[in-house]
Length: 116
Image 1 (cartoon, helix red, strand yellow):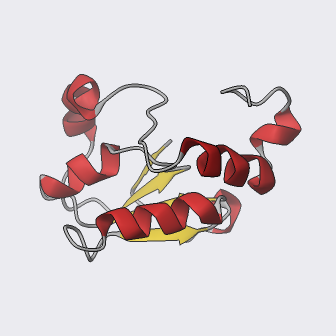
Image 2: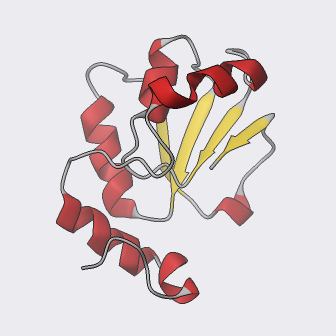
């Protein structure tokens, strides 16, 4: 399986992403960079009290790192039920109140900040 989807249809396909995360296993995957690379810009614009939506969270550790620093008003969503189950399991003990939901971004309620 190639890392990136070949078509727009694959990019928006829950089946594609379920397969992707099954094959990758529990290893985290960062599209844009690790938290340490992004924290300067994130902290400039996002406050711990902001109601934040993490869109297409995948298996990224970004929201976990932010949560550990006090960003608790955060909801992580993805269209892949496989990765949502993996993330709930991965965070069940250390971060039991972290929220992960299988959800389409177009069906969300209101948030102060969106991270994609």
